[in-house]
Image (tube, rainbow, N blue to C red; front, side, top):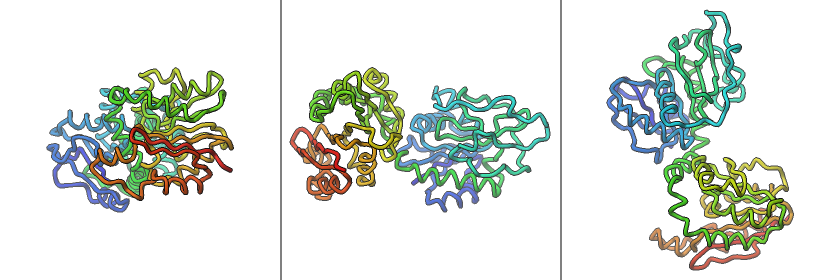
Length: 400
């Protein structure tokens, strides 16, 4: 797992206290020097961005481009001190629209001009700042104004200068009163950075997925439009009852949603669920909201009650997850006693192996001798299995 540390005023390296915290979290550091050396072209194999300051000699266009990609892919970002200007400027230029509404109001700022920086009520539910404790009184607030995007969530304020800490979307934070370079973090700053490093590590799997698919979201539908008939035929094999709830898990641009809607009818419900917001945005552009709702969520922690789902369609997802049995248990949790699960891919296992110039893997989860016991041990009965030249399909039924 790698964190890019960018924006320092010198080329001497990452501050010792910063490097120590990141190393303790198991994160490798890629340092960007003052002249822009070491700045990656994209976020491939990068799990987080730490912006310490904005040196005048830095290649602003390249830094903006990397941050723009991070905001779009929900890659964790932490900007400190003057680095917050680069973050907010990128959000404004890129047109990234955070999904959360600011809870800051003028009444939440103390009228005492000598008041220290204080956390807002919004910080109590923030993934980074919740329970972290009050900022130290010796940390002086940033005195210059910093316009924030309209939907920024203000997390720390002081009299006259409310924007001392904020969040953009669900994965980018700025802390203005904590200097990014040349000044020791101190105990509170180290605690904050340790929290952020742990968050980076915990989100690493999703970060890699989002970064990969965000780069491909715009042209995904066009590249694979020819597969639409195969998706329709696969969904037809589910034989769902009208009026039920059907999920397209790992939906991407939602190619299965029209066929799922046709099965459950207007009285039913269809949810397209994906972990990559850019894919869901592409699905919306291609009209998939006419067939159901789109939801950004983790397929291992579905925001759905027990026994509420009647059908699950999933294409090319299960065998790419790190703990597929855990995933199958979660899918069983939300499924009714008569639910159907259909795993699909528009090419067979042998075809995909040949495409990647490798032999068939006997440990492949989708091999029948592996998939059947995995299904049976997690509440599913594998009723149909086809690994053909032109497609892969496995139809399972829920078993209590």
